[in-house]
Image 1 (cartoon, rainbow, N blue to C red):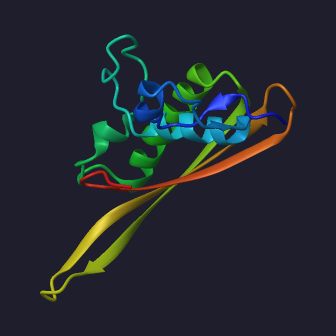
Image 2: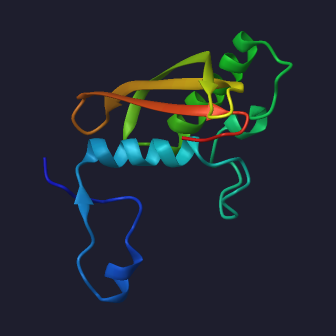
Length: 143
């Protein structure tokens, strides 16, 4: 399939120099857009307050159970991806939250929650299966 979609992030230097921007295929474009949704919080985009997901709302939430966090994130992502990424249909999101221990140089251990997000669906144009995996650490969010 032809590469008809611009690669994210856009390279402003190429735009300024009036050069051709890098392009990608539809699958990579959808992956990039899903990444943009997952790393944006609601209200961040002033032109569309509903763009984003709820990961930021639970970023420092240490009191809510893992199952409830998983449901909040999963429901938010299914709604956001289904409504904003129209090139994808039959969206299914699986969220796994695990605790991971990190040791640093001063022998202090830190435990962080890792969120694995697997998005499955079908490319609308071709009905090809689509799958991507996003992995984040929350409290605070990093990827």
